[in-house]
Length: 466
Image 1 (cartoon, helix red, strand yellow):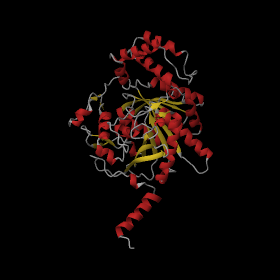
Image 2 (cartoon, rainbow, N blue to C red; image 1 turned 180 degrees about the vertical axis):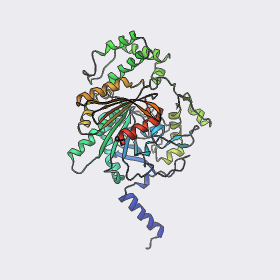
Image 3 (tube, one colour; image 1 turned 135 degrees about the horizontal axis):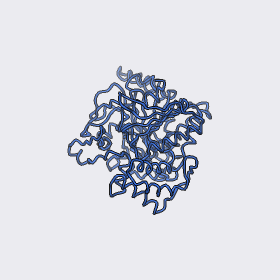
Image 4 (cartoon, rainbow, N blue to C red; image 1 turned 120 degrees about the vertical axis):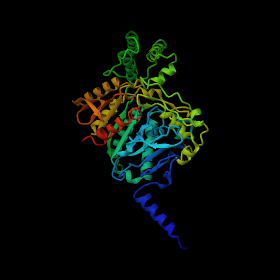
């Protein structure tokens, strides 16, 4: 039986580009709704990490804008735990942000795809479009999340073998201060324990990471007191309840706050933001000086443009991304939501049923970061100076403690600038531990200061020789 010329060339194309070069063409995205023309390719779909349990992680992979076959691969994980890394890619790091009516897309001039191929993974189960058919899988924690990510990466490299030996960077924000170090350490362990596996881990980058939970909480109230947002007397009252827990005496065991102490913390948060609701106060923690977007899905459904620009930041970008991902035509183009969720898409938490281990939040991440540094893998940490959720003042103390633990001397202590503007402060310890504060940035630096975030990623992570 003869074969048509077109079919023959399709087979050849698939063999070359789907096999030798290593792209999984069945997961290639044609064009996203409302997307401008681009010269790079996008892929998305599911990796079944446990077919028996029906457990699958969703991913979105974007080629670097130029020369993708020579540039590194960066895996990006968003915290929460329970926030979507794929949704987060439309908030500051990925190639697109939404138009003001959330019906289309526009190019992100500060996309990290300018210097790296980017792989965004919805993790753990219950984040974004990742799911399981087994209810117990939604009782997740650091170990189960890390195990799934390792299986995911092994299977993803089977789909995209050309990236197996590429320079690999691991990054994320917030609770990814747990996800990313755990994953990096495990991949490095694979390198030492297996002759057949080799992960070319070149660096770790963490934005506003949760590293030492109790001390990060205490830093919130220290920050409020230092800025005159709460009375110092109230801060001292809160400080008494921490029982000597400090940088040199941190313990992992979960803490049950007394009712009186919880009330003191709630009072401090409401005073700090001058609100009458604890829920509203916690929403405000992520940005000390900008108020959240007050737009609604109903506004976007009616065709309105929804924006709220405060100090050069459009606070409605995350809302518009959630709306865009709710559109059926977008979900179809993304090969997403194969379980046909009946509710609207949310970038974080709601309705998925995820119940993440509270005990794991208390784990001290400095020992794992120390082991990563001892394997000569550089770590870069950046923090928004206007972040009240995981304040910079606490994170900087953790970094200094980490530097001391690995005997790194302070080699740089100076202001850094970007585009003739004051960027923040830079601390360098030894050759491979860097901390950078970002002026005017909130808990999510790539969202609130995308140009500065790209600068940090390009010049202090990908090419620190600049």
